[in-house]
Image 1: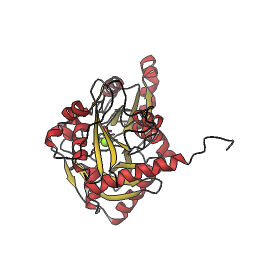
Image 2: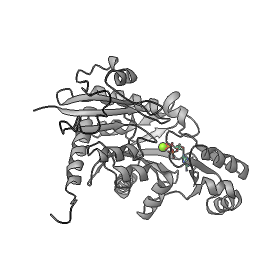
Image 3: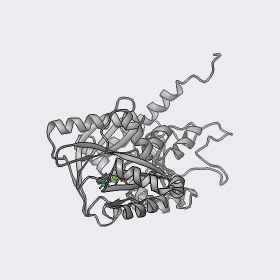
Image 4: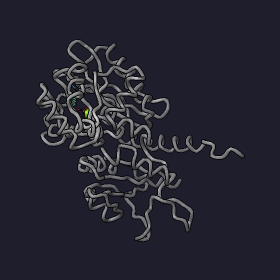
Length: 362
Ligand SMILES: Nc1ncnc2c1ncn2[C@@H]1O[C@H](COP(=O)(O)OP(=O)(O)O)[C@@H](O)[C@H]1O
Ligand SMILES: [Mg+2]
């Protein structure tokens, strides 16, 4: 049987560029060399695409111990994600985007892969875009009956034109303390907590530097942070649960990627009822945003046992020690088997989409 040609895309024009490189290093080194031929596709911080040696340098693939890395034989002026018109064939059988945040996890690259008619791992355009926007995601999840904290979405131009009614609305509907978050970022970038009007104003101004949409949400005091991995397409499964114990007041950027102070506890210590409820909510969240392949759904649990969905990440951190693969490992699915399954799901979904009728005459 010939090997599947897998293109792994990493890097990206995003604040999570380095995180993506870490995830991609793990993915590339764990792909089974008996099954796959691997092609490295890097996106630089300023948005340039690099292949072959340049991509390998970006990833540091010399240290990877992966014999299945191959080079593309494309002309310098060709863009290999598109089919070669001369031979009417594709360079890749499947693409594995290992990109976090804007331009990677938000449906943009997924749209390009749809246009190229390539199977790819993970959520499609719609699921990615909805899951990425903390405002729209909440609207969709609330409609599906999932438990959420009170929130309001603020549009930057309206805030700048007239902040007073927005402050008043937040004070009556949400009150202090509250969290202020740019709608379309990850890794806790631009997120602050406000306990009075002056701080709220500063927090909204700050979040507006990162995005034109901002979410303000009721803050919990030191909630437990519980995460669940979901895997599948239309009929997804939930893993056992994990808990993050942040090293600082909240799980911020430093804590996630720099100081390594936060702890992962697997399995999370919860009652059987809580665990069942959270796993059901995770699957329901996945379905509500029309996700595919994989997602990590994050929850808050209060001291009183109240459960809230915080967010869904469609391309969760993917290093060997990241929560998403760790939870599957604890559920009996090893890292490289998980990669096989994700690739299968990508191919299945592509097949399923091909059933779509594109003509009304035939
Ligand atoms: N409403 C909230 N109440 C308490 N803590 C929160 C709240 N929202 C966010 N946090 C804290 O901030 C962290 C980052 O927020 P989150 O919405 O998950 O953004 P990101 O997409 O950047 O991970 C959370 O992991 C949690 O520690
Ligand atoms: Mg988060």
